[in-house]
Image (cartoon, rainbow, N blue to C red):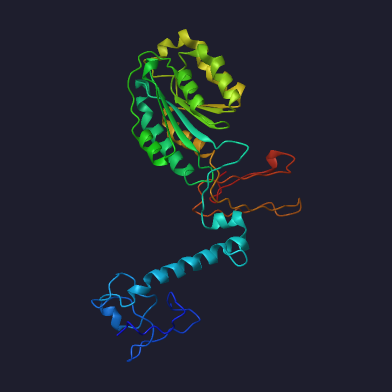
Length: 355
């Protein structure tokens, strides 16, 4: 009945929906009208179509127009290409490329002919004393990878270096797959150690050697460096490759190991000297704060995939209150204020009135 009832031999339609400004052809006793969804074993075929042509099966018994499925697919594909990228009327041309990417949440790797794509490197202490911290490290670092893989700063590769005691237990791996990196981070376990200082600088050297230029290297440990004699070597490679080291340090080892601190007093500041010489940072946190601080420090480096910017200029005579509306979906909010003569002229408050 439906095989030869095509209304037009030259046009295909994708369907009619309620609310459109085109009246939908109704089925008639002669079989003319819009094809219904459903095959011969689907009772909906007796009802007026709500849109589209049934393309669920490629057999004449169930889809009388099966021989037109490929043609319909090609027409839909060409229509999509036209809608998105036509030089005159396409959405990309109307919006501009940058806004087009934001609207469609298109993510691209940061690539520039002048600079090599960046890498993300974690250098993590997996000695026994990190036992109280490793769960927080796993969760914070995996969350970071999940976020950066959907940002506009997708790295060229991910690098994971773990260090322990003795130095021969150091491991180093790299991958271009975020899923594989997440698996490595999820599988992190602690073992070994014994005395307080660990081979942190050896791990950092390995991570720096594997890293791309102009990248960040995150070092997470609870101990001073046993191999402090490699400080100059570390600074040299970090400066040469323009790498930024970011140290995240919990209290030096456990209470059991702190009795050794007197013998290694100078080691506790080697991280500060490296950071100062290379533009890096050192963040010392309590174990209970580790996960929150690590997440904030790591994710603070990731720009939002879609940045919504709102600005206003206020005069001295304007009312003293300015409301900033923030959608619930916003995870990170940055507020820049300029033009104040004194910071005491400004007070930021939450909606509940708290500062």
